[in-house]
Length: 378
Image 1 (tube, one colour):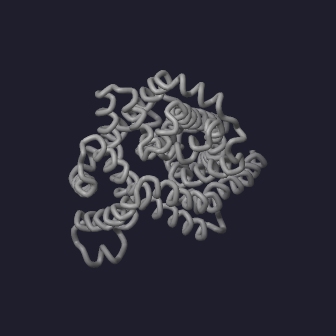
Image 2 (image 1 turned 180 degrees about the horizontal axis):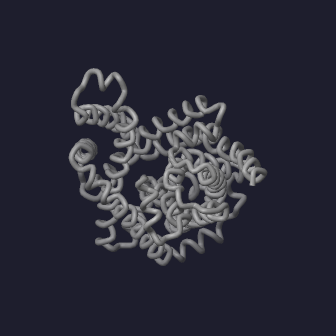
Image 3 (image 1 turned 135 degrees about the vertical axis):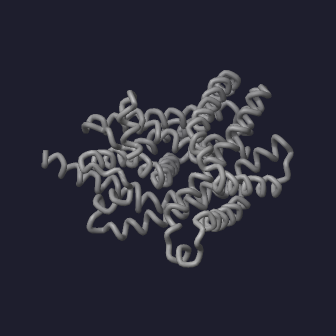
């Protein structure tokens, strides 16, 4: 109901709002650090400038079919949507989605902690374990006492990261323009395996689909036509694909150091040499990391707080929330100790492979069938 009233009051076309949700969900600490983009795209040289469009096009296709089915059937709740969309195999796919969600709850906050701790170590000289404990404590405090504050600030943090990234991209391309031209001329598309680059891009679309499709469906009310659904997908593909390609181009100007760095974008910021930009970048990434961790914590609380094991044994809802958050953060801290590179190159990699076949492709294949049924009915 809340999303519906917002869309009704807003003068912004729904397809722009939904594309913005996709963009905002996509741009998190993993993108802000640059390591995610480097691992999936920049390491493939020239190919990495074009393969983001393949990934986003596949994701856009899945989102289009999901939005169109949501629009026609007036369903905005993800659970209700999947039950109807995948009927009569909804139980099977619900299990798959649950697995993907729980794994994402380990990997994404774990990456947030690892990224923030690495930044605090490089920028402030803070000990890794002190930084880890600090992030965990702040997360617990904000979940229990600062829920409203985090929700109110989440949009501002996303906008802040986007502004910082835009500045890094523009100044980085200007600063590294000579190297960009040199590296471009000294490399060829055949220097890297084309099939490997494409497969990596597809796996990227796979793990992104585990959260983005559901978020887009939850705000899909207001779409009035098939054209609106198509506009959402096209705009989302363009915005996200362009962002990834630009970050790859910036890294092209600072190779090989940026690619070998755990925090490629921070390395580029340091080369740009504007202290205020460095400080703003670190603060926004840390705050956005906290926002992401807390968002996942809220999702887990909503999902598990009414389970009999809690309701029958614990009276206080706040204590239930605290237990869920502490368990999540304990596991996330353990995941964070593996480091940024391992979380992205192993954790996200295999989540992506799994999600290709249980989320991304099923949405596309079932969507094609459902879309034909909708066209026949109209």
